[in-house]
Every structure is written in C-alpha cells, then in structure tokens.
Image (cartoon, rainbow, N blue to C red; front, top):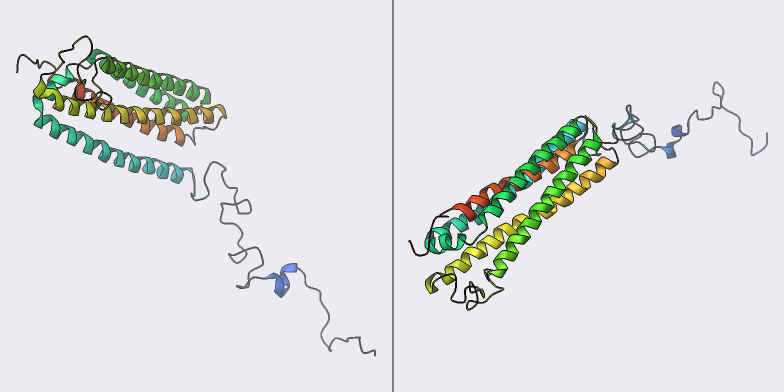
Length: 283
C-alpha cells in the first residue's frame, strides 16, 4: 500500500456529503444552514422565499393591509392632535386679546370682507364633499374617479387661496397690514387720510390684524400643503394604484383636508362675524 492511499476501516464505507449544507463550514454559528436564521424554516412571509407570497402593497413592517391601514390612520390622527393643540393655543390667545381690547377688535373686524369670506367658506365645504366622492371612488377601485374628484378638490383649494390673496390685497390698499405700514401710516389709506381708527384704537387694531394675518396665513399654508398631497394622490391614481383593498393614501389625505376645512369653520366666525354690528360712533 502506498503512503498516500487510504483504506476505510472494516464495516465502514466512504460517503460523500449529500448536500452542501452538510459541510460544517456551510453552517452558521447556530447550526442552521447558511443563509437562514430560523432553523431552516425559510422566510417569515415578508420575503419571496416564505410559505406565501408577500403582498407588494404592504410595507415590510406590517403583517397585512388591515394593519397597515390602521397604522396609517392612527398616525394621521396623532398628527392632527398636535395641529389641534397648535390652533387651539393660537385661538385661546386671540380670545384673551379680544376680551382685553374688545372695542378695537370689534371695530377692526368691520373692515374685513365678510361676503368674500362667506363665499370662501362655501368653497371649502364643497371641496370636502369632493374629497368624500374621491374616497368613495377609491373604495370601488375607480382610479379615474379618484383622479377626477381629487383634481376638482385641488381646483377648489387653489380658488380658496386665490380669494384669500384678493382679501389680502384689499387690506393692503386700506393700509391694514401690521409691519408693512408703520404706526403713523397704519389704517390711513389715501382715501381716509385722517385714519380709519381713532388714536386710542390704533395700536389694538394692529394687534387684531396681526392675529388675522397669522391665523389665516398659517391656514392658507396648510391649504398649500394639502394641494401638494392631493397632487400626489392624483399621481398614484394615474398609475392605477388603488383597489377596493388598498386606498389608504386617499383616506389619509382626506382626513388632513377635512381638518383644514374644520379649522376655517372656526376662523371665519371668530375673525369676521363676532361683533359685526359694532360701530365706532356707537359703542
């Protein structure tokens, strides 16, 4: 027998490994076949190697569409709760100052365009209705209907912003923008060189319009964000992303849009209608 030959012991026979995973160096530190971490049970259902195919509409961190939908809606409600606290604090501050400078705030509100504000209110209310129609279309898997009604919503949102810009221009003409006009020129447009307010109401009137522009400006900014979100929904609808089982983005976007509309329902009467009958010569 040569030095390099080998004879198996009696009763034993040479056997090649049946699988590559039988080789020690092909197993991980836990004794599992290389490439797995669950004892050879395969994927957990979120990958392509599991016992069932993973739904491409479900993000990896969720088990199914129902859980994903609930998480998304809960997240939006949590965000809206922070928005309620923000606007609630701002409106509380407005109420305190309105009580402190009652006559000045009442007099200043008379220079707002109440009819234009009312029209804008109806524009927003109708936009909420079109959002409801878009959600209904999404529930039916009607992507064309979603795109159509969301586009109508966008047009109404842009109309609201445009009308608000028209109101701002009116207040600019009347020299009623604090900061843009100093104390000497505030409320003294060329048509009323003697001033729209008596001297004792001049400074409190500036406080009122500071609140007006802050509250309506932030609300308009939320409208701009809402229009951007709705454009994204239209893009998804154009790609036929929505089905009767998956329409979460439309529903979440609708929640945000409805919230912005509700905020305006509070702003309009507080800024435009309270003490509307007040007259400077009739305290």
